[in-house]
Length: 326
Image (cartoon, rainbow, N blue to C red; front, side, top):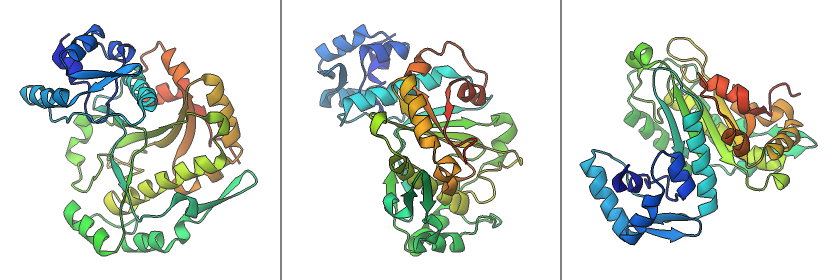
């Protein structure tokens, strides 16, 4: 354990750490106070964030360790950061993954196009969601310009991006709270890489997650807004970046793409799953093939296993929202 390793925990997407979270990460939480005494950290509420001097030292120590990570800025919402980071740490320890790579990314910086307000893509009727996503001119234009079943030729990522821009498809940032990428066996798949794999999602199962801080008031409409953005992101990948190999990998095996809502308690997760589950498959329709689930931080904390796989981990802990619905 060292002050350097603790300071380097404060990378760009993980700006706020508490003593408890540092201990979960396998480091000495007492070093937080020592770093604060040196002026590298400052206490904010129940935890710590970097000072300007801490950011300077972060860059120095990262360079010395051959790390490409950037230092974090100030947290906008420290309690949300705690929820995201604890969930990420619990995912990191919860399952082994395959003999490849497992990434748990906090607040990934992704993009969507075309730029459409999620609320304009659906309406709610009773317990059901009606979707207009494919009726949008921007979406239908994208699908026509980039057929999902086309053969992927020699076109480079740069050329693809140029075509998207020339087609007038404005991009918008999108950042779910967590992205877990469970790569398939590297030794088996490493020759199957694609230059157009914009977000590193080829030959992988993907789990996207948002925290729900007020589950009692989280409605089907709130959930549909999340699924609208999720669906646009999937559409971009299925039609533009990875046609023919997003849902079926390069070895003709199925890959899974799942959406999760995370609550603090198990009771909240169960109640939320029942409420959203009333919409059945209509909630997830534009994202298919996909599924939606709830999960609780309480259940994650109590999970004492090290699951052999991503699937066992989800099966043990997640509550289905869209499986078995109408």
